[in-house]
Every structure is written in structure tokens, then in C-alpha cells.
Image (cartoon, rainbow, N blue to C red; front, top):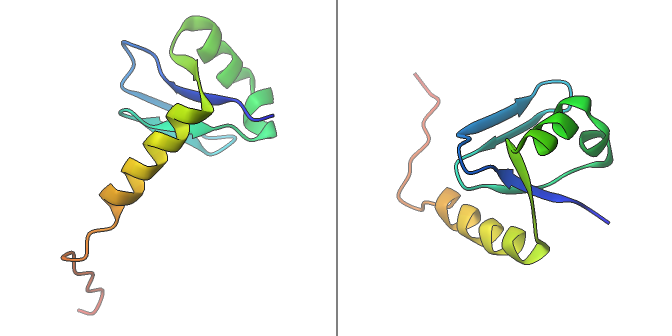
Amino acid sequence: MSKYVKLGEKATIFSDPLTGLVITGTEVVSLTQKQEQSKKVKAAIGGGHLVLSTKEEYQENKGKSEAKNSNPDAETNFDS
């Protein structure tokens, strides 16, 4: 069963470079097994920097982030 986490009340960003986990703003993320076992993630949960969330909140947030990331008016031009 996956654990879902989000930033604590006073946190603005969390990053664990060893597992590739980055959380910003109001994101709710599903942790991989490697991320769940990370000492940094465990310490952040214990210290309140990260808080456990629900699957429902994760699914709500996922829908919002997909809508936010899909901008049909945005143009990407990598040709110079």
C-alpha cells in the first residue's frame, strides 16, 4: 500500500536528491518503496516537514496538476 505525503503547514519545499523526490506548494505525492525507506523522508515525516495524506486527496491534487500542466495556448519552440 502506497503512502501519500504533502508538505507540512510551515514547509514550502522538500527535496531528497537520493530518491529524486521533490515536493512543492500544495502537491500530494505517492511515495515509492525506496522513498518510504529513505532516512531523509522518515525524518521529514517525523519532524512535521512532510505529513501523511489520503489517496482521495492525492487523486484530487493529481487532477488539478494535470489541468495546470496542460495549457493548449503554450508554445514550445526549441529552434533557435
